[in-house]
Length: 399
Image 1 (cartoon, rainbow, N blue to C red):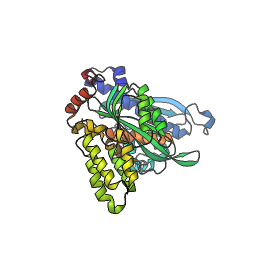
Image 2 (image 1 turned 180 degrees about the horizontal axis):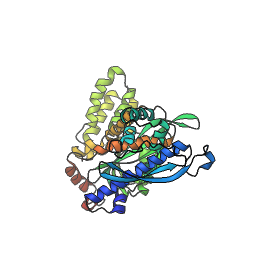
Image 3 (image 1 turned 60 degrees about the horizontal axis):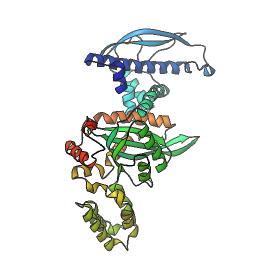
């Protein structure tokens, strides 16, 4: 968006409307080109795969009407005159009803075949699944540009987690992790910083993600909330040495109760709650000692996991309740992942990394449309951050 504003330099609402018209025009142009490619069976200049005598024959200009006025587009032509465009049909002058339908449906998890049937039933548009796939492929350069955009100089909180999908690679299906980072800026707004498709989740891959975040302009992260992946903390401190790490309490509870028998789970959790819900760290340590005295001999691994990871588990005790609620768990990013799963549940296997990334990007843009608020009591939280991290952030950073 900053790049668009720098290019167009709009001064009023009319200038913004002109900018959006250009964006829609480019999108429609790309979709029409995809239709022509599907019609001829080969991409522009790819003559090696040409199996027809027909070929491209320039463009004809056409003016259509949509929700923001009139728009002039170039309709591709073929030499034999057989090309029948579907996204903007011959003699069609009003595109307001379908200008955003294909990408919107794809972003909500509909398969290409579902979209084909919907367009045929509702709009009378005849578009094959292959054509729909090629149309949505046109979003990939935009998605890649988003993935490489500059980031904020400083973030108050960054949540990091991975979600897993089956992807076909070299004629086999393998499980790949999509590494996701969601950052809360100093003004309280949040954004998805990026989504990276990689192999199995590892601290080594996270190190590469963190380096990329730094290379894209982020100089400091105050607090990082993560799960219990081994070596995660070391990877974070290798890139952002001053960041404070809060290990997810919910993940830790799930891990430590794996060793507890069913008949003991309720009393064990009742005693454990006295540890992580304590008012101060000193009280929490006293309750952890009491927990060890009562359950240590029966469930040593459960107690030891809290003791060994206490440095990263106890970070939130130093902060006020308003900030504790934000950082003690990775629920913020898990809720985002849950919404991604709703969209992608129709696809058990993705044919390529790009196919997976394309769907996740479109889903992400749909999900984040509602991210227009700030956490409750953010002004109060910011005052606390300015005090705790004096010298690293100031009101100038917020502005």
